[in-house]
Amino acid sequence: MASEDRADVEPRVKIYFARGFIRMASTGPKPLVFCGPSGSGKSTLLQKLLLDFPDKFGFSVSHTTRRPREGEVDGVHYHFTTVKQMENDIKQGRFIESATFGGNLYGTSKESVERVSKAGKVCILDIDVQGVKKVKQTALNPLYVFIKPPSLDELESRLRKRNTENDESLKMRLKIANEEMKYAEDPNNFDFVVINDNLENAYYQLKEFVNRKIILNSGDTTEN
Image (cartoon, rainbow, N blue to C red; front, top):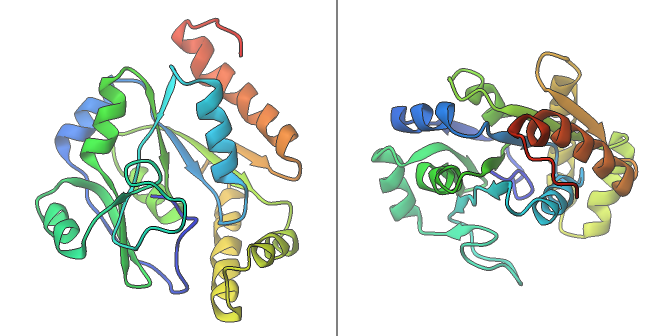
């Protein structure tokens, strides 16, 4: 679940895992989990990776009950749905994980992840630290990547430039970001942490990690 849109309150997280999904994922390509605070540049780096390796990676499009923003396309940026429909799907066990933020539901459906895996691609999941902790309790066993801003001050500057936050929501985002960054300091929590102080340099490091851990291990020697 993408963390870029998380609202101004501490999340009440409910995580659901389907046995069929765990069996499928453990035998298919190893998933890649992206994590990082809003404003870290995570989404930009993720998109660059998808563009460079279109046949290798596929993105699991999250569901949300919030209204689409200008320029967002249903099925591309999110699967936009209703609260009633999503709550019913969660009860039916169709979601791997879901969470409530500021009155809106967000989640990763089993179908979205399976669609990528069945295509023979490495599934990329965009989730927050709460989701990471829950995934670690399963047999999914993905590779975990954390995108870290240079500092909280720089992160605050980036968020202010977006002009989408009020003082209260900005304060909450920075609080959550600080907690996430502390969690990422433990070397056991992520396979790779990249500091995004320069986009091209950060992407170079990310690409090197992906080449070493995924591309070369799959026997694909195609250079990008």
